[in-house]
Length: 450
Image (cartoon, rainbow, N blue to C red; front, side, top):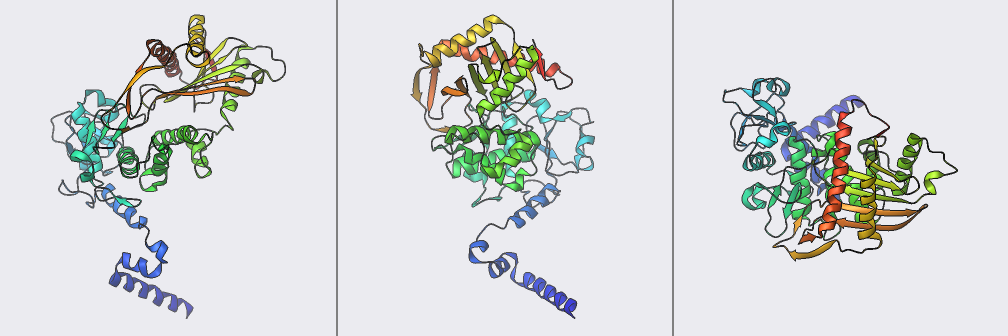
């Protein structure tokens, strides 16, 4: 009897759903505060339909074919079996290929078909802009938190090419541009998440950014938007979680990301150290063990150290965040990517060590020279991930100096002193040396000398 009652109730609920519609039913059954929230279940349903050759967001193409396979001009050609999702492909041949009958891997076997990331340098700026624009145009009408995405809300109805950062949002004119320097793979979900959630929603709509010391919120918005986040790549997740930690410290002074994000941070970016000194201690401990230096007591806590963190937010290097650490006790200079815990490179060139120390003294300790000679106001403010150099000096366990130098500005054009540009060049030279040797390693290594 009880089973029949449950069945009747279920049938009645289904009839009510058909008669009233999903949205109206939600308003009847849910409390007012919850019924007013976006229906993310419906959003997920819509997203899945166009990922799998549906046509919920297809406005340009016939037969529901809208896979990310583009020609060399950035014009969308067709589909693979997977639908509009995953890696972006480019075809530079002239043969008429029915991509809808192929999987992504099968398509890559055809001559002239390659991934965007492998062929990007052969694409014109306009072609790259066309591809990004086409990707986000398929998300027309997508609800992002309390806003509904529309291409018309971006000036020019497109994602342009240019700017100082990987992605650039122009706050006055409403333009969004990319420079193709982002340090993660080009996939539909990665690009859509960056342009729509980070640039359009967080910067353009909500004004989160450097001026309000709220840039970290843009990264939180990306992570919290599970619709896209769950389909992004691991490299994308690692970059965003690392950047969240960087902006959390830069804007609030807290070493760790907020508690709701620590599990993801540990999973994709690496274990959270209690503070920067813990990280430096571990690096110096490795270096000391590797050099077989006789330690007395707590060696790496009793020696002064200088830590320069170089953050570039781009794919110009193997990693986007490096530490260059100097220990005065043993004249040891170490290079170490922030999220690769065991791969250290020790610099043996004494001239480079001396230059490194001299530059730190000139600009940060004795401050004999200015870093920025002058600056001029830009026509409009631009939000982007600005590269920076952080300098920390320790005397024992106490941090005696902290300074952060941004290598750009959203509101001003900066002119750096020639000597400071030489300092930047030295850091880049050391980092390039690290990258070159890192890529030669077939297996991870604990510590090597070059």
